Image (cartoon, rainbow, N blue to C red):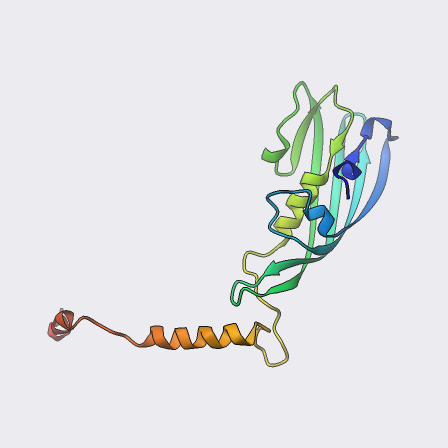
Length: 175
């Protein structure tokens, strides 16, 4: 998948509402060197509202991305979903798209807008901060059983409180 597939030539588009659909996979994430995702299947529906004074893009994101479980470090497909808006205004200078949240400024000389970076950032924002395997029928996450057993052994070992005997006498004092 080429990065230029996400370039919108808004000057050649008529005013009004336009819809674009993208089906993203691992080749999209490979476009970004810093990507924390290697695989995924994400559908992005973009609605562009174009006028001569401003542009408004609405991103509807649904799909799955392959992430590492925070608990067992195993890979799994995490469902994601999100809705985002990007407002584009025109001015004397183009603003840095990396610094924009939901509004950017393009110079009047610009004729195209690359949406790839915005799509990637919106996918990242759709992923929760805590990533664990989904819960199974038994109410427990479906983590790697070997890693779960190792974690239980380590947790049991950590619960054994070993203190320095020199400090034990402090427990006799009442404050």
